[in-house]
Length: 243
Image (cartoon, rainbow, N blue to C red; front, side):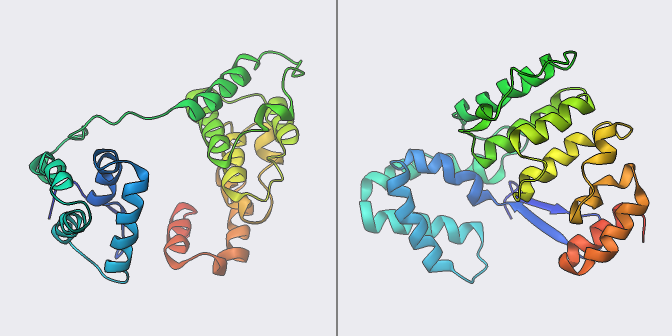
């Protein structure tokens, strides 16, 4: 089996999650190598139709890759594929990939800049510089990056700022669970704050307050237990100290 596999063994007996396979890591650089998204989407469609419902090896994936482009584009694409250092991809070790990936960070930059503005305003009681227009052009991923940046890169914001942010951007009541969960995690960054005790206390979100109110977390899980898949149930039971 190639070394560059992304299987992660969870701390739950009997459960293994494969988060990133070799072929997924190679897809983006190969997309650029072979002519861009339009060319590669046709290949992906053929790949899905060929292997749907099957478990395959990396070698089968590579053989199919060569076969597809040989049948559809001839020698030109095969020469490009032969230029790939397959040994480095299959057997390389360490954190560096065989090719340097260049990312378009323009969308992330907007989210980072907004997070920086909130951090800079932490000592101010005047938050009039912020408005709903700040995020009017943000997509879900940008909102997630914004909230995660605040949680990971800066000290906990004052409760007044967290509560105002939730109201201003509508994220304390958004139906989007990905955004709401990250906002509540941001509120819980300081477990002793007013925001931590006020905000994340509805439905499944009550599970997040384990460090603040374990009784609420346990009662929320007991009520919502069957709505989680079996793996999630075991992980939450472990986190809550129920097993």
